[in-house]
Length: 505
Image 1 (tube, helix red, strand yellow):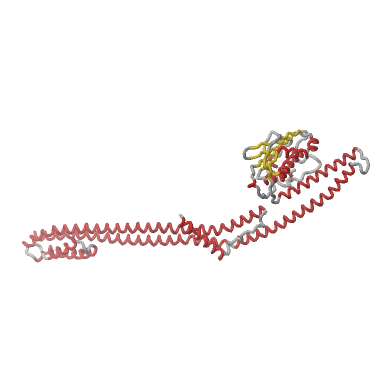
Image 2 (spheres, helix red, strand yellow):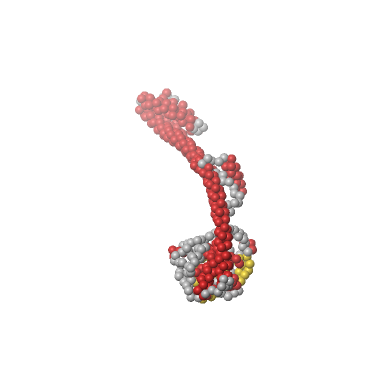
């Protein structure tokens, strides 16, 4: 098993070296060359099989003709022997000279055929005995009648030798047929070995050319995956293959550089936009705070309500800007910082941030009690809970319920955030966790959401190798977070990509 494997590896190495020196001009050229090279051993096999069959057919035809001729000649000799004896005995009875003429003719014919039979059986003793007896029988016509009659007893051994010669002829024909059969079996065995060798060669050529075709395609696939995963800046092996695939690889390089340019433009836009938005927003909130403190004089109750609305709107706008920055951050690689924390403590800290909004909505909150310890990333888990609770506050019904549940198994942590209210339509569920998607259900309040809240939550879940999904529950809406057990060895940089949700808040 080691030798074929080593031979195959050497063949692949030689093919790779040849492919590096010779590059087919087009994919069509490579496919046609592969077809011709694969068909070449099969064509050789067909030619050799045709030659062998032609040889066997010719040999069988010649042997059949010779067998028929020799068998017929042996039978003729047997018939002539009977006619010689009959003519001689008739002459001994009636003594007619015409019978001797017939006897001489039959004797000459027998001698001629026996000479040809001697070529088939040169060493046969019966043939030699018949030749000697022919000389004796040729002397009969010149003898007196009395001696002629006494010599008739010589025809008995003559007939026995003739029959023995016929049987020897049949045996020689059988031996020849056995030889032809053995040669046919040898040819068949040779054809089987040739078939195995040449078909194996064709299969090997198929594998080699398949590798020549598949290899650049796999390189292109890896290039595409690197672009999609955001790691296209790594050094890659240039595609070696048909011109079409090489050109496609160059187009992918151009696309990769173009995507880098667009990503840089997007990052620059988000940085500038966040700065430009937060600067005037800070001035607005500072001014509203000064008015609320009475710096410009006492305010009426109606004026205080307007200032409270301005301050709440400013807080909401600041929250939206922070969500947008979080989404931008999660589009890039970030290393997890796992630590064993009590999930109940993290959940209650996040709930405290939404206490006023929950009181305003008069929602009844039920949160699990700790300790529920797990290895999590505090920042990522805080973002997940913050966005899920914000989503429940924005879309939940006034005076409704909000439940936060958690349970652990041997291999996973399950966290659920459920709220009462209007259910998510079926046509919107297909777009779960899609960034910037706004579903048919609108937020309750004066401000419209950014559409990335749940997308950020899903990205944070994927960052921890977990999943966030919408599940059925006794309450109207329930999001379930599932996180696996993660050790220090599993901490790695994970690219977080935007998901799909119909109700990103």
